Amino acid sequence: MEAKVTKEMELKKKKEVQPAAGEGTRPGPVYIPAVDILETQDEIIVLADMSGVDGKNVDIDLKDNQLTIRGRVDSVVDEKEVPLYSEFGWGDYMRTFTLSDVVNQEKITAKMDQGVLRLTLPKVEKIKPKKIAVTAG
Amino acid sequence: MAIIRWQGPPGPFGELERIRREMDRLFNEVSTGTEPFFSRAYPAVNITEDGENFYVRGELPGVKPEDLEVAVVEGRLLIRGERKLGTEEKSANYHRREREGGFFRRIIALPARVNSEKVVARVKNGVFTITLPKSEEAKPRKITVKGA
Image (cartoon, rainbow over all chains, first blue to last red; front, side, top):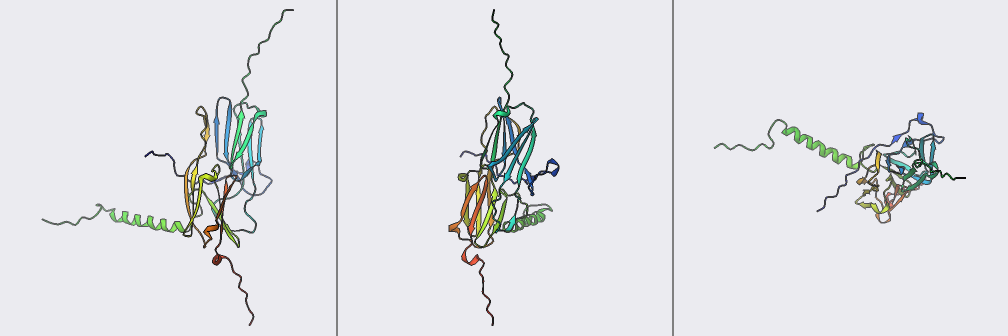
């Protein structure tokens, strides 16, 4: 029998953003999404867990190497419902990173799939030595 | 020849060990009914109700509907599945790795009887909602109070 290497998942408490990091205009908690950041030769990929965030509610901002991702969560709980038991809080997401590489802002792509953001940041191509043809005139 | 009755695990801690096991058993039994406010169980759930249904919701980012199994067995709700993280290129160099994958399984004791035939589970943007219609006897019934 082939042993399948899967481990049982454990819950990690959602971390809230401290107000010092910039308060939102909407009341309610803002959480720090868990991320994977990986780099290949040509690009930097950011994967962020942002459950409840629809593609249209993602905001990506890159300014002076500061990359900020924000995700707004639309409530799925109807106002008529009465809470019985609660283990986690609903809220928006925000996180800021400082990029060490120069990325091509024009070519950043973002995709939301099942509450996971996939952000692709292509690195700026190395400046290639330009050959200048000298024409005899 | 003297017959010595075997005493089980030797040493002074035998009895303590037995008590510890008993305590573990007790705690396990208690915690299956009402979970502590923050348990390590994954995924975390929120439960709400209205007149018609119970709603169990939780966050499972990146879990596809086909990787999630929901069942109602004897007044308990079973949620299980696997969170698969996509495999990235081998050449990729990780700067941060905070997201985790693996299998999960949760059993939640339901507060009242539900119509298990009509339970609906939906996944949207990594949030699941399980709608459990209350059975007739669990629904709030208005009783008209008659004047004498």
